[in-house]
Image (cartoon, rainbow, N blue to C red; front, side, top):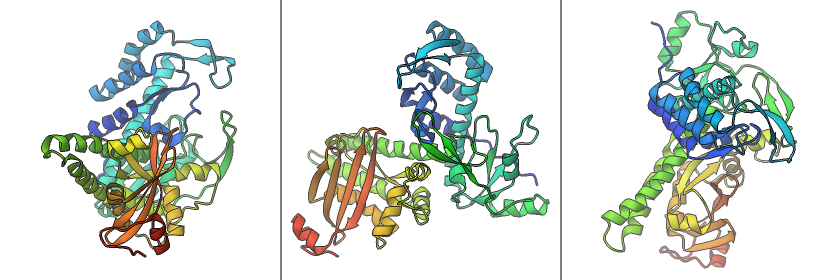
Length: 434
């Protein structure tokens, strides 16, 4: 029985692209935003100073939703971009340095390139949604290098038929697309699929391929990045997973807004706040139960949170949604989003400093935010919440990051008796705690 690569329903790829389109960010260089940052924004290099990012996004969205070709996409956009002056080689000012440089703006080749990259990234995000949703029945991913390419990458060829679990850390840097023009793909497999492939004599490999790394200078920022061999600079992350997790955070955000709106309509006078809080707590509990949260905790067990190298810092920014702020709480800390996320770096730090905290305990973060006896503004964009939940005293800190428009859980721990007395907590269960 032949095993075919599953066709992706358009809806999941469209949702991934539309999510990025909520933030249009003109940029000068593709290095201005790095790797997984692109999962939550839509950018076009050399578009800074020209009102074209929205036009290009609309063209891509139309092409993806209507099944149009790259030729259709280019034909419709070319006259519009030319009319706005974004075409051919021109002298433009680099906003970072103020220097005039010769830059390639729009061209037929560039539009083909923009189309190819964005379609592949959108499909990767949609595929990863499917991988996570079906992980129990199809727990493996197979790296597939498409044969017959005119200029194959030898290392990508060597990775062909690598089969690892969906949650294996190798995918964090090697999931495709993992380079400019990369046409490799991933195929989800059930245990029966694996057995059938082996029975057909397909040489599957069940260990991550050996490989080294190289240093690469980001001339835009001056940072030295560590890049795995075979991966292009800027692609040493998992585009599909980054898009999937950005979509989940957006869903939490949407739920927060809708919960408050619905609560106002269906609740009795004075009960809307409690109704919305109950909805947020139910949804937050589901976030902690999801496979993505479990995968983050597993990854944190081997992540070195003390490593300050650029590559480690980038990997540590991986995050999943864990809680939801009300509109009032969001405004208090100056946040643009209601979704509170836990990063891989913080999860690893939590395991090191508070090993007693279990995965299920993170469900209490939302209840603590909703019912905290003590709320302290520890900084302009940082708030702490303290109180009793399920008979124990807890302390949580959330921080809004202006640059990335994200809200992070930076600390979550039980409080000692001394800390309880210092904060003046009483709680319905009376003074106490661990």
